[in-house]
Image 1 (cartoon, one colour):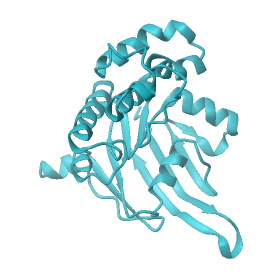
Image 2: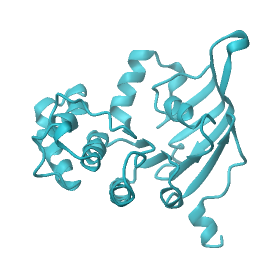
Image 3: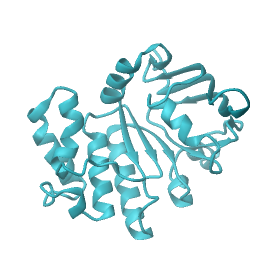
Length: 237
């Protein structure tokens, strides 16, 4: 039996507002992302990239069309079911880290495990993940006590806590200096490679984008013709 794609959209449309004020953020996106692929979404500001990420991640809903993620049709889920789906199947890494300021690094990583019902039984995993991202000695520190790069390391550990099938990263190095951003990029790609996790990435960092298997270009809510995977093309096949 052939595995279904990690992500599959069919004529995906997202409209914000109504009447003359309506904005068509996505205008019929047909996209398939294979399991284990690293895909980068590129396009100018306002092109619909983040909207597409949010719909794939179940944060937002489509106006029409369908989206299947990890074999589940998100179009048929209510808000509660989408929340549970995100919790169990998808990890998120954001540009602004999105850590809870009143929780320590360990508690931030534990948060999705707590929500999944694992509670403090997940503490060893949280500590293991923080060790893997180089923060074994910072687990009791609060976000305000951590540098930007350290906060993003916590965010990556948190995203991996539930061993997600798909990791969504929106400008994960956007708030970091060049050297720190390169370290975070290495960490992110190493982490998803070890788990055969599907990565869907938005970035303006050309070096980061070049490390992906495939580039999908979005312009004014439309997707350009889907090219062959970068690594396959590089091999001349």
